[in-house]
Image (cartoon, rainbow, N blue to C red):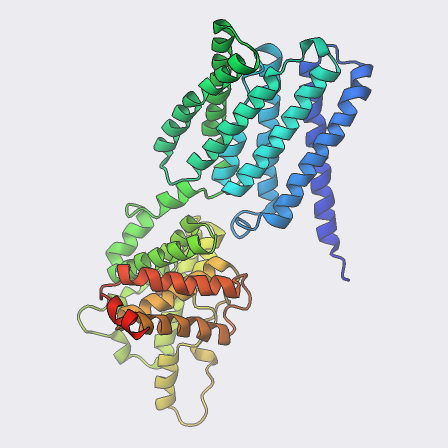
Length: 481
Ligand SMILES: [Fe+2]
Ligand SMILES: [Fe+2]
């Protein structure tokens, strides 16, 4: 078995980094809560606690590396680790301060859920929240129950459970489609709405009085509002610091008022409409195969952006029946056509678009041959003609997004040129496109599975009748079955 030294060193470095973070996080939290932090608390609480929390942190690391596949094509493992661990650090330290100087009900946990969900994905948001809950439980229990039993209160158990419930609702809220403004109000209102839970716990589990119920609700309110504040303040910082393209940023970049798309619409309206149709297909397919629909949509909108440089050489922009390729030799035509890939990459790089979108623009034709001009050249050439000059000088799709755009792009173009007569024909066309690309080896270097391809086919067949102009006769298709 081949041992990858670089991989081993990277993992060792990350595990050491996680240990350093755990060491200081625990040091600060225990010192904050255990008022007489001395040699006794160091050996009895601090050391075992650091080991327990380190194991929790390593569990999160294993999850990110082995199981969190959802985001791997647009946010690296290193970035996800930095995001998760730093926000856990902030939340645990702030909660320890509040616990020590204010009330056990002011837990800052949903900030972790919101940040990780928005910056990465919902599942990682949930897993990171459970790890944070375990960490807080370990810190608060050991710092009070073991060190100073007289200060231990069951309130901490209740408030952690209430915080966990609030965090799960926050996860659902931020995982849905909302603008930044709606999300801000949504999180504030949800934070407010969850405060009675703390009051209910205090009343029923601790036989609370009116004053203690009010205190529990007020503490919970402070915890929730601080969580929202940390989320709103740190989110733009993290977006910039880690160059993360959140769904907010991706949605903003797909707006028709975005300068690059506006330019595409003005210079190449046909390409803009084609890209919008591809975006609808790609978004639905991404939902079906568990890819980020916002990223798929953005990739589709910008995949042909390079056509802006020579719009009239592309059929979708030729409205006056004039085709400039009629006056060109095939080699020149091919140069112009394939040039849209290189031009697109340059435009996207100049506009600092994310790598996944740039890759989709570069790889959406792979290194396939432009058959039309190859056969045209063959018709006017004597002898054998190599197809090398008539290929795209690019790479086969290396991400699932690039491969998805390749499939949706061809299906859209084919069905726009010649709409399917019925559902059966539509299925045959889409199936044919996927089989051809598989045969050409275009899907060999991406992580799309046979199951994914089957889901993509079914989704395109479902969506096309609603997005393409020609209506498909479903009744006829059913009769045939
Ligand atoms: Fe293209
Ligand atoms: Fe295209």
